[in-house]
Amino acid sequence: MSRQSRLNALEAAGLSHKRPDAVTAPLFNSGISFFLAADKVQVKYEMLRAHSVEGWNVTEAAKSHGYSRPSFYLVQEAFAGQGMEGLIDERPGRRGPLKLTEEIVAYLLAAPVEVSGGVLAEEVEQRFGVQLHRRTIERARRQ
Image: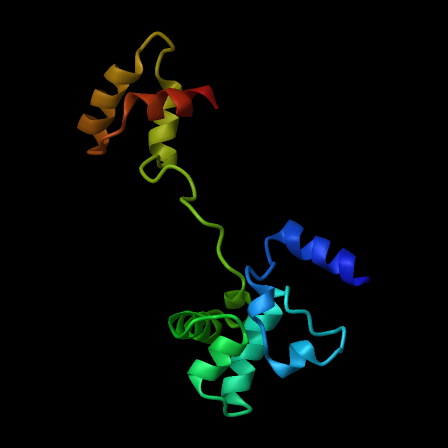
């Protein structure tokens, strides 16, 4: 895989290091093509390895890999809990409507078409104890 195709793949997958120019660790400046400062997961792993295997202190490991001390600890915790998967950032933002359970959606879809979102919002609150905006209900019914 060429360097450019690797960069393109990392960018497409959202795995590009935001500040590859800030990575000053010797491995990434050794001329060995395997080590790529733009590879966020590799940089995080090597940062943790530099600390735990090579004995670098947290501050120097973080700084030389383009991260802050607080970020180092977050990466370390994620790796301890999830292994390599923990080094991949989660997609930002919510994962969808928080209050729309399968049961509520089924109820909304079973309601007659002529019943408004406002009326259904009141019914959902009475029946399920969940407050929904009428627009949320209208969007759920369109899907």
